[in-house]
Image (cartoon, rainbow, N blue to C red; front, side, top):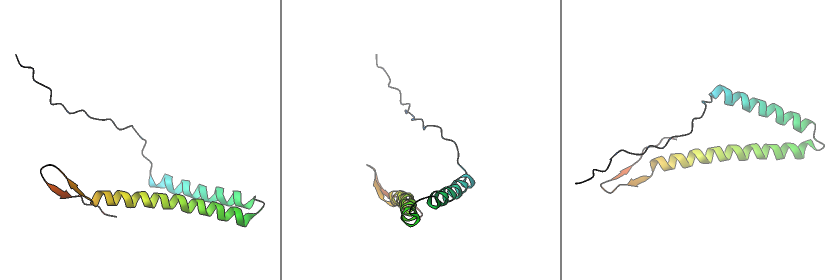
Length: 92
């Protein structure tokens, strides 16, 4: 008597995340700008604090851009399957 193995594929569930609209992100950035300006305005040394905050904002923006670039690179790298070699297509 032979036992037939199931060929069902195991699916991994992605955690459910709420959709975030572009409008929400833009509003959050506007609120960040206001918060940063208010914080800088009340600082003892506005120039030093302003530069520190601006540098941190640039760092966050650079991180986002670097992630996008890496994702684009990953989409365009050649991949190898046992049967064939192909190239992914990505657009930046």
